[in-house]
Length: 107
Length: 122
Image (cartoon, rainbow over all chains, first blue to last red; front, side, top):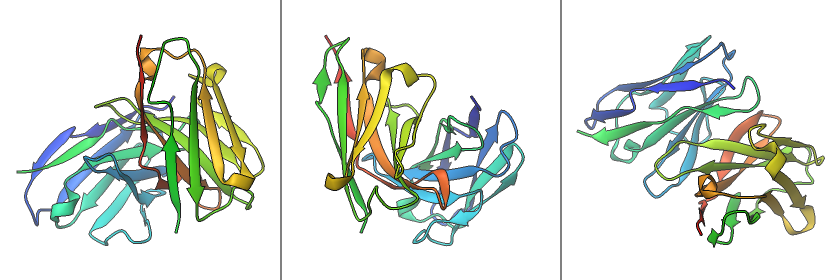
C-alpha cells in the first residue's frame, strides 16, 4: 500500500493567516490526490480532487498543488470555520489510502 | 440534494458479524457511474477505506480485510450494505458511507454520511 505522510500533525494558526499543509506519498501518485476536511463533530467535507480541483461550493481561499510524491493544501486567509482536521488521500493505486491528518488549531 | 445516513448495531461482541446499512437519497445506484464506498475511523485515528460498490454491481475491497468484507446494494430502496465477519476490538470505529462517481474519479468521495459508531466489546 502507498503510505501517505502529512506534516505537521498539528498546526496552531491565527485568523487571517496563510497556512500550508503538506502530504508526501511513499511513491509517485501522478497527481491522484484528494483533500478532505473533518470537523470535531465528525462531519467530513470534500475540498479538492485530483491535486488542484476545487469541489463545488468550497471557498476559493482553499487551493491545492503538487506533483510526484509531494502535495500541499493552502488556505490563503484563515476563517473561524477552517479550524478542523485535514486529510489527504491518494488513489493512484488500490487500496486508496489516507494521510494521518493535520489538526489546524486556533493560536 | 444528496444525503447519506449510516445505521448499525452500536455494539456487538467479538467473533460476531457486523452489518451496516447506508440509506441515501439524491442519486441512484442504478445510474451509470454512481457508486457508494465505506470508510472507517477508529477513535482519534485516521481514515481507512474498506470497499466500493458500483452501479453495475462491480465491487472492490481493501485487500487487508477482503476475506471478511461483503458489500452489496438494494437499488430499489436506495441502500448499500457492508458486512464484516468475525469482528474483534480492532474493528471498533466510526463507519462512514460516501458517494463516489466514476466520471470524477473512482475514489473521490464527494458526499459523506454523518457516520455511525460501532463498538466491539465482550
